[in-house]
Length: 236
Image (cartoon, rainbow, N blue to C red):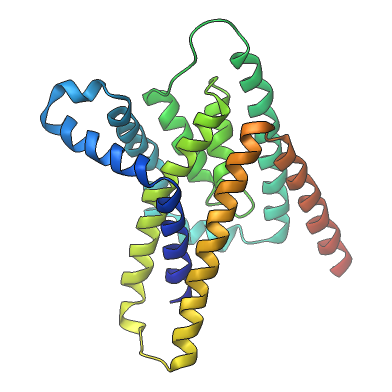
């Protein structure tokens, strides 16, 4: 039940920050379903790209999530995955900056880019691979501007977190028991903590990416990976 509360807190945090964007995307998507003229609007296209990018994660999550988590739960796998995340971040920044600085119109999302970003989200099911890191970097290698990549990454996470929330809610529905005051307080505290942490993480990410590149996070992943390797081999 605590997992459900955390998902809800994170989801509400995302909706708080991107409330206007989400409403606008939903509005233009619904209008575009019935009026072809609206399908040329950027928000309608964003909605379609989010749907396309969500497909790989939905397939992976539905069919093989539990198997992957059980097989790849080793600390060594997680440490290696952190190094992979760092490499993806470095490459994304290097290629993205190079393409950004070339003359011409800014690169925009298309179906191919959305699908590739979706695969980036799908592989993040492996412990240690950052979902936001891969989705942002996978769009950066196509020349998408950093701020737009970050925005799309956060918007893309909303349907996935919503799906996870509903799945966990249904799964734990039969197990829900009305506990005492302590249980209720714990659930409320979990929601508040995840909500505040989510708001802070989103705002921090937006500010960092506005002024600096993502190599900062790549270095963090490398240091964390080294730490995991050291502790693992010292204990064994």
